[in-house]
Image 1: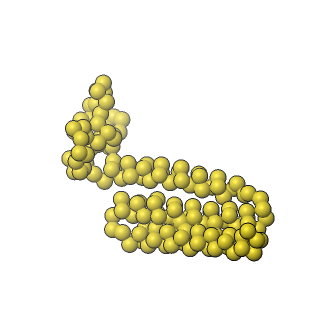
Image 2: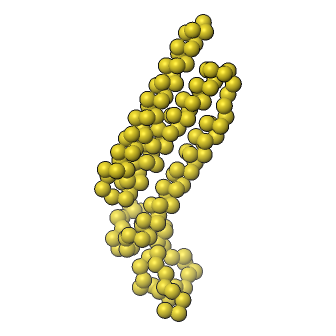
Length: 142
């Protein structure tokens, strides 16, 4: 392959990744603004925007490979860190939402013989506040 053809293919690949990443970020941002509930708004940025940022970072990495001939690992590490942390933060926000906004009786069925694990007390726990809402703890002395 000649250098001109390799350069053209490289530029096309970088442009395609930039366009795809920008599209995913636009869709994720639009979902964050327009979706009605917290759980739906949480889904949009953690899925679509993560793919968008990942595509843009991979495009940046490929751009530096094609222009300088060296691999830039910084973008790859940022992408890996983003793909690892976004689902964990979404899980923690969803779990906090379940604890704060819904009582145990209002939760949708799990489809299994057991309930939601986050609301099931341990077998050996001796709770004095059985009547309180899940996730809410009584203050000491009150």
